[in-house]
Image 1 (cartoon, one colour):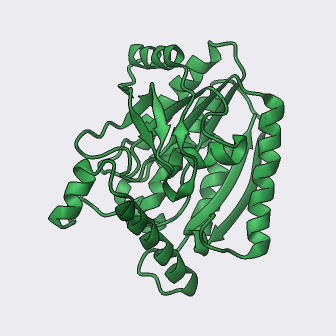
Image 2 (image 1 turned 30 degrees about the vertical axis):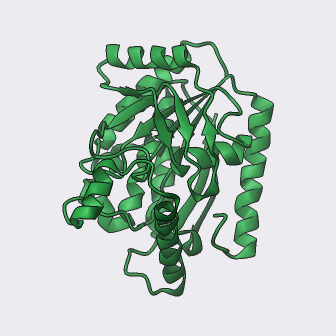
Length: 297
């Protein structure tokens, strides 16, 4: 978003919507933010890959020059969330050293100015390292997080970051050469030049996508819009019926990040009926993303 120029009109629209939402966040003044986010083999690896992880302590690695620094995690609250989930049969892992990439950092930066602006509990959902948690289980986890949040008597902002259709160059461990497989297993804290090379590969893919030359899947606005409409309607049935390979074939390997949308909508539903806003959608090849923005209250 900040590295590849898109149509200036589209760019201005996206930023205007985020600015509008940032003002709403300032007015709401949340006492706690819960953010469901993905990782792109920058903080979570196959040496240990839980389906769900609460960050008791967490920092943003600042990839793509987004964010950086420590999240303001209220440790006792985060541990209480984990205890609640475990007591309700959600097998939640925890981390006292969560490294969060742009999948976590970008939305807080756009809405609050930084990852440490408000007390925040980050919850990682494995969206990049198959086999992935089922959408049914993601929904159940999100709902239980929402039920826990309802016990706090606090103003809570729930964020779901990730998706929609996109097909970034994330290797599959089953077919990757040995040195790439080793990166997927234990590639923490790579040299800066390795990190930049990975980012440049994504930029080059976006350039090819914009020119219609990419070998990756094109964006799928029809699927994106249908999914967003299902979330507004509280209809999880269609996405829960989809298998991993089926969804990848339709909307790319990156589309599995919609698990964070499912978790966020399920968590919000614990508060009861809501007013929904389907705010914006545009397929933006230069950003290799189906860019969707929605809200509920």
